[in-house]
Image (cartoon, rainbow, N blue to C red; front, side, top):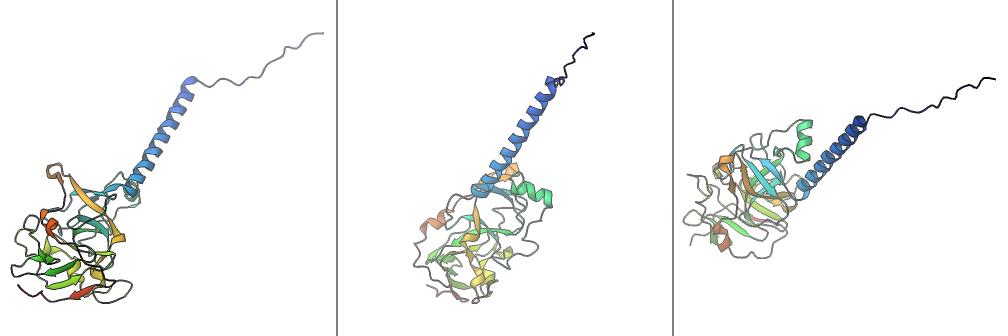
Length: 258
């Protein structure tokens, strides 16, 4: 009898370099996904970058400037704030160019600055309960009776306002104005408008605080325009507001001159 040799069926070992490459690829994917998740969380809760789309904040901010907006700190009078369109404010010149789906994805994960589509940027002039008026005998904006010295940020040659008004800012909302007053479609120009949900004339002039994305704190691009954005000293002298009414008080007349 002849013995038949027994053959052992064994799987060939994978080359070491292949398994090493697969491990490195998996690690790379995990790093990228983790970075995207962290970036998205930071964008959602800490801060993000916006591109300035219009002339309404010149010369503080120029078209094309990139600004960093932080979301952790409560906004206050004098801050430059980014906010969602309260409804009917945005014209084609004020709304940023909307990116395609790929560009929007990179915006969402924080790898590209927000194109500002659907957002505006203005200076916060009146907090809830503040009385804002134009103008005193020297043509200055009044907040709670205190005149603002705005020459440090107002666009050269612009008057503080060509529109006369007296308003009391309602609870939960703010009153905003651009630094380039003659080129800004801000709270003043909506003092007779109703909000998208209806209501009384003038309701649309005030920005709900829950629509504020955050406050702009730095201009970071172009490199030659790097600057910190803060609250001008003139706002430090403004008295505290009174109780904020549930509905705004609006008069399209100038305050009595003293």
